[in-house]
Amino acid sequence: MERFDIQGGTRLEGEVTVNGAKNAALPIMAAALLGSGTTRIRGVPHLRDIRTMSAILGELGARVERRNGVIEITPEDESRYVAPYELVRQMRASICLLGPLVAKRKRARVSLPGGCVIGVRPIDLHLKGITALGAEISLDGGYIDAAVDHLTGTDIFLGGPFGSTTLGTCNVMMAACLAQGRTVIECAACEPEIVDLAGFLTKMGARISGAGSHRIAIDGVDELRGADHEVIPDRIEAGTFLAAAAVTRGDVTVRGLRLDHLSAVIDILTRIGVAIEPTADGCRVTATDGFQATDVVALPYPGVPTDLQAQMSALLATADGISVVTDKVFPDRFMHVAELNRMGARIRKEGNSAIIVGRPQLTAAPVMASDLRASAALVLAGMAAQGYTIIHRVYHIDRGYDRIDERLNQLGARVERVQEDLS
Ligand code: EPU
Image 1 (spheres, rainbow, N blue to C red):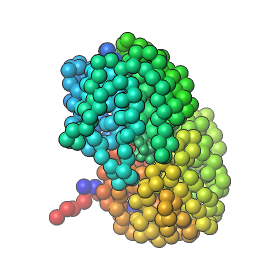
Image 2: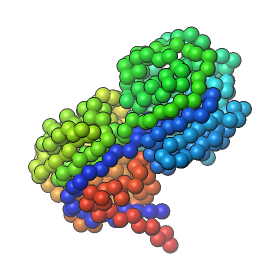
Image 3: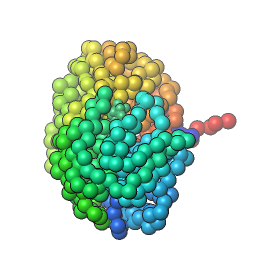
C-alpha cells in the first residue's frame, strides 16, 4: 500500500492541464457495447476505474485496446452478459452496463454494486427506468438479472429523494436508444457528462434531444454503429486544482478546462476572495491570505458538485469566519471531517452539513484517506498545513486523479509517494 508524505507550506505556481473526465469516459465506454464495430474514445484518463471498466468489457466479450491515448472498443462475443461481482465491487459505476446489455444483448446479469463509504447509494431508479422500458428484472444472489424480447419507449419520471440520478439517466438513455418508439425521461440529470454521452450516442446513430435539460427525448433506432469521440475535460479534477491553488495561496493557470462547467464553483471562489481570470483555454487562479467564509450547498448540476464538497470544505477550513457546507446529493459524505479535524480544522457535522470555523493555519498530522474525493481534500489540507502530513491509503485518489502527486509537484508542491512498510 502507498501513502503520501506531504511537506506543507509551499505555494503552488505554474501551469497544469486538465485530463479527460473519468465520469464521462466510464458511461461512454459502456455505451460502446451498443454499437456494431469499433468505437474510439480519445482523452480517456489513465485511472484505476478506467482499467476496471476495460476489464469488465473484456469479460463481456469486447476487445479493448489502448494506444496513443486512444481507447478502442470492439464488441466481439455478444453472447456474454455477466458483469461479475469481483470486478463490479471495485467500481460502482459498473451499474451503467445494465442499460447497454439489456438493449443490445436482451439479457444482463450485473452484480449489485452495494453501498460505499459516501453513502447507501441505492439503484432503485435505474431499475425503475429499465423496467418501464419493458425488461423483466429480478434480484438473485447479489445480482440483477434482466431480460427482454424488445424494449418499448415510454414516459419515465426518474426523480428520487435526492433529485436526479446521473448514472440512472445514462442507463435509461442508453437503453432507450434501441427501444421501439419514443422515450421521454422527466427529471433527467443535467450534468455535462450526460450531454457528452448523448453526443457520443448521437454519433453512433441515436436520436436524442434535450440532453442537458430535465427532459430528454429519445427516438429508438434499430441499430447503432461504433463512433469516434473525445471526452470532455474533467470538471472535478479542474475544480480540485482551482481549490489547490487557492488553499496554498498560489498563482496557477489551469488549462484545458470548461469554465461553463464550473460556474457554481467559480462563484464560490470569487465570493471568498480568490481571483479567477479567464484565459484562452481555462483560467488563472490567484489567491492571497484572508479568505472570507461562505456557505456552500452541493446540488445536482448546475449547482456545486458533491464531488467537490470535501475539497471546498478543506479550503474553507482556512477561511476567516464560519462556513456551512451542506451536501444535498450525498448527505453522509463527510468522512473527511474527522481527518481534517486531526489537522487542526474546527468542523462539526450537523445532519447533512459541516459547520466550519475557519482558522488561519492547519497543522500537519498522520491521516487516513477514506474515499476518492475525501483523499483529495486531505492532500489540499496537507499542502496548506504547517509541517509534514502523512496520508495513508492513497490508492483511493488514484481512482480519480492521474499522477496527482507528480502534477502537484510540478507546481511546486512537495508530495512524496511512499511504499508503506506493512511489517
Ligand atoms: N439515488 C437514488 N436512487 C438511485 C440512484 C441514485 O436514490 O437509483 C440517489 C443517490 O443515493 C444520491 C443521488 O440519488 O443521493 C444522486 O446519485 P447519482 O445517481 O447521481 O450518483 P451516481 O450516478 O451513482 C455519479 C458519479 C459520482 C457523483 C454522483 C453525483 C460517476 C461514475 N459517478 O454517481 O461520482 O458523486 O454522480 O454527481 O459518474 C466520484 O467521481 O467521486 C463520484 C462518486
